[in-house]
Length: 194
Image (cartoon, rainbow, N blue to C red; front, side):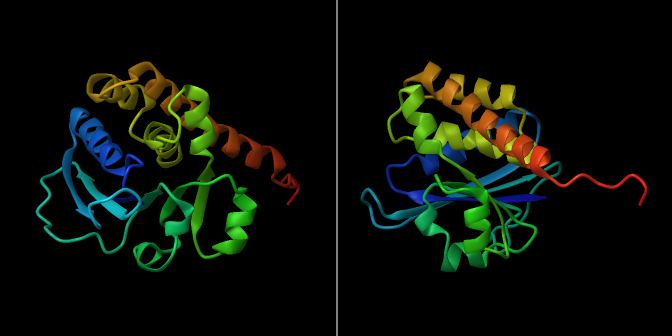
C-alpha cells in the first residue's frame, strides 16, 4: 500500500492536488482512499490531504502515521508533526527554491527533493498556485502515476486555466528529471577495476 501525505496552507491548492492525485490513481484502476483535515477556515492555515493507494480494497480508517511520500507545498511546514510521519525511506517533495544540498544539510535524516514550484507556476501563467507543478514533480520523483495520466486528469477536472495547469505539471515533472540528471552527471565515476 502506498500512503501519501499532502501538506499545504489554505489557498495553495493542496486539497485540489489531493483530489487530482486520487482521481488519477483511481482512473488507472487502483483502489484509493482520500481524506483531508483543515485548520481554521481561512487562507494560510495548514491543511492536509491523505491518500492511500493499493491494488486491493483499503480497509484502514485511520490517519497515516508513516508516509511513503510527502508532498509539501510550503517549506516552513517541514517540521514537527509533518516530519513525525516520515522516516529515512519517505520521499519528501517540497516547494522550495533552495538547493537539494542545502536541504540535505538542514534535514540530514530525510530524502528531500526541492522543486521551485512558484517559479514554474509563474512561468506557466498561474501566479502562486503551485499544485499542478508540484503534482508533476511528485509523479516524476515517485515514478507514478504516469505524466500523461496526470495531465489527462488535470484536463478533465481543472476548474480553469486548464492549458496553464497542464503545462505547469509537465514543467514540474521536467524539473525533477533535470535534478536527477544533474545528480547523475555529478556523481563520482566508479572504478571498473574494483
